Length: 104
Length: 163
Length: 363
Image (cartoon, rainbow over all chains, first blue to last red; front, top):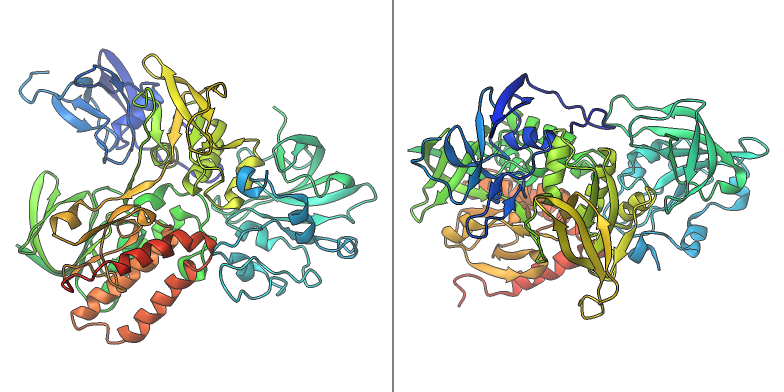
């Protein structure tokens, strides 16, 4: 859900790019945080907690809280609230603490 | 209930802040609904006529000489609290003119009939947009000039467009 | 290893002001910030600031961020964005990370202006996606142009809660209510009146009992609190919402100061654990200064002034800024004025407590 008409702000956007989330192909703007593109697509569950397997979204949006860790291009524990979107990225929900050696 | 528990000023506060009936009968004048001491004084810098008196302490509530106020509305867009309005009770026999800060999109259009809302956001009647006063860019607060039935001049403080 | 006169950590209102002030005195200044855009939280503040002309009152936060950055650039501050400060060691070395590379830097003076982080609140299902810090929602809407949902409930009627409620409406989101556990509104009355005009109710002596939803938030139960701040059974109301914003206060981000061995004090009025510091913002470790929310959680207008004070004082201690006795006094007076009114009462009390704690080395 993009804000189209804001009374005070304009949102200059980068190039439109496609990326992959789980088995979906999504669109976003290059350089925006991955989480912003996912929110625009209505995706708010970003990972699963380690012990109780509960869904987690993001909380702080500025890279402080680690609630939004996802697996990006095979690398776990990426803070998607600050990681910039690039064309062709593969983004997956992270389960638990993430495996550095898994081949995604 | 009071300003501190529900955000609404009481009648005494409103009466005390208002210009005299004689002044209101003379034409446009600014109404300052700023009741609490906070560190803030842009209204002083914005006033071209010296109607907003100098602040001894930046936390003071603005003191206004309504006889010097011309109702120009410069202070409205300068006020960070959006707490200033201009009322002209001499606009026509039945209507008063209000200048209200409005930071929402899309802006209403000139001539548009709009809902007029009181301080609690309740619709209290209809008004008509007379003019939209926009600043140099989107960062400036637009002022909507609207007419309302005279009896609502001290009630109406916001507006909403019909869908 | 790189060297510099002054290193400023944090590019918000305090850090930018500190860097500019020190650089204008002739100091070589490096400023680092972990994000790509400078301005700290100002970059999402679409409202106009309070204060006086010196603190750019009447100007929107987003505009102040731009102006502060321009000033820092004009003063030839070396700005390193996307650079995170990782550690602060006893030999005075600061480690930084930029582009996955480690940089070691040894500054003669350090200004820590790392800001604060949002607090959370305990209630059932408080981890559901759709529950955000109020600042996070502001970032999403006002920096990235994405609406967080359709209908929000705000917890907290301090300035942040009131301002973000207004900004949610500006972004086209409905705000069902603002709930505040205290019996009165904590923020400025003008902010409260602004959202009342939009028809948003402010429920004082109310809190969140629970959040509901499957995968993501669908609603919240609020209830009234008694004078002991306990929920009153039977007063529950269920509000449909896909956004719950928590605006329940901020905690100073002081990890680096702990690591540096600064004397820390717990002062609730200042936001929690803060370093001891003197009237020029210098901590118990000589050469380490603190400014902005990392020193005491208050308004951005004060952050700019504490930053300026720390910047001038650090330059003065390097033998620069000969006018500091006069300039510093002027800046301290500016701060005193900002904190003089009823809204500065908490901060005055907190600073009084901090000053009363034994001065380091005096024991």
